[in-house]
Length: 113
Image (cartoon, rainbow, N blue to C red; front, top):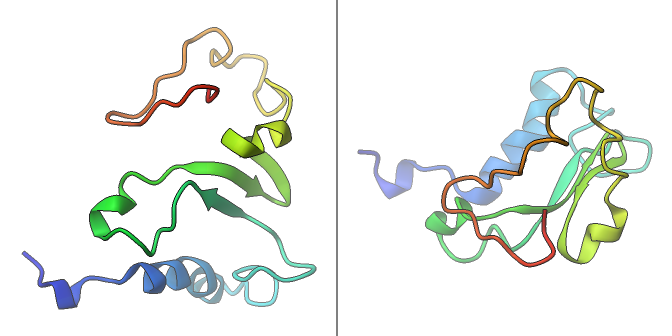
């Protein structure tokens, strides 16, 4: 296996996924950092991704997701920001008729969908 020194630290991974992704796709100046006038795609996580060790990263969940400057998912203390149900789904989607399936091992909290 890989040595601990060869693994990417969480702060490096976030930089590579944001500013690095903007550079790679020639999107610098339009996205890649949070700044006025730039596209805002980001997630607020339920815990600090830089605390708790690498194993904790697999348990993190988004409590707020914003894509293109619009809230696309909200739960917990942000649930009031959740868009109207079905607003993001096409008419043919079965999501409204099917029960939600949490990912294996996911924590289920009261009030979350």
